[in-house]
Amino acid sequence: MKEFFFSQLNEFFPFRKLITLLLAWSVGIQFVLISYNHLSGYHHLSGILSFLSHLLIGSALNLISAFIVAIPDLLIMRYMNRFFPWKTRLLTRIGIQLSLTLVVAVLCSTLITMFVNWISAYPKGLPSVLITNALIFSVINILMIVVLEAWYFFIESDKAKLKSETLERELSQVRFEVLKNQINPHFMFNSLNVLSGLIEKDVAKAQLFIDEFAHIYRYVLETIEKPVVSLNEELDFIRSYIFLQQIRYGESLSFKVNLPADLLVMLLPPLSLQLVMENAIKHNIVNLSQPLGIEIFHESGWLIIKNNMQRKISSNVSTGLGQKNLVKRYAMICEDIPQFMVESNHYIVCLPLIQTDHDERINR
Image 1: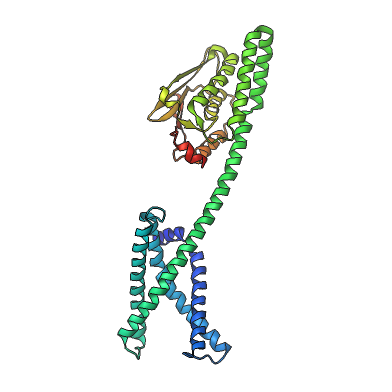
Image 2: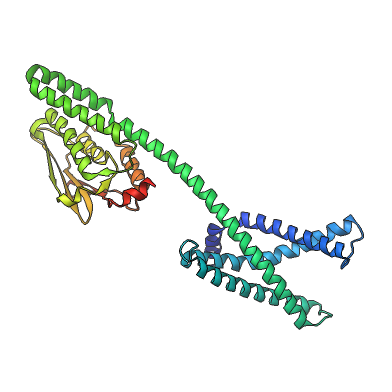
């Protein structure tokens, strides 16, 4: 339980950074107090060694006191961030956090004062010392929580910047991989072979083949930088892709779409369907005796792509790179990620569909 508590606290505010901050805080406060007492004549220092010894001992005691106070302060901040965020409940947060900060200061000052008095009684009387220390601790704790909040915002800003840079690098890598995979040399080679045969047999169909082929690569180049496209655009593209494949495989490859019209405005990452189709064709036997059927439908807001499984014996072992990239692309734009499963000798891919109003938030 203790380990869990400290791990959670360390995740919220790293202990190493906390110790560094509190050490600087303790030395700074002690330096100011010693200098003020010396200059005001309240406690005259005999020399540099006296100054250093007071600074060392005082800083150590301050560090212990600061640590005792900082832990509840951090717990207060964590609670406030969860239930009273700055952006939405500013005034409520200021009032509650200030009150809790003063309560913590009074409790800590009372405990520490009582402990010191137990070791060596104060000559001026305990009640007056309790009040004085409570006031001092209150002011110091208000300053401390302000410093902790500022330092926390600095840490979070640094984390956000690092995360943004990491995501940007990953996104660039994913875009490169997607572009590299979609402009597939094998697909281009096979398509050009099919086109070569069509030119000799059927010029009209060859012209249609060229139009669809151009549409595919135009779509790739236009959408590769977009985070999402509409399902309607993606289906229009995939029909061109399947058309080229059906020219090659003929009736051995069937494709069926059963989707309601209101679903076509939903969003998904570009070229998602092409990746699924390409994997289905690449890893399964496709001939007249063993035709491959691919169907697209929806279920509970998810886009389902389903094909019968008839694995190629000589098929290379899949690296899964395409699927991993697809998962990464989804992770950058929504909480749901694609699901891949085998069920009743069918391979099923479930792709999340994103609401159209989510596009504005993504582009921001």
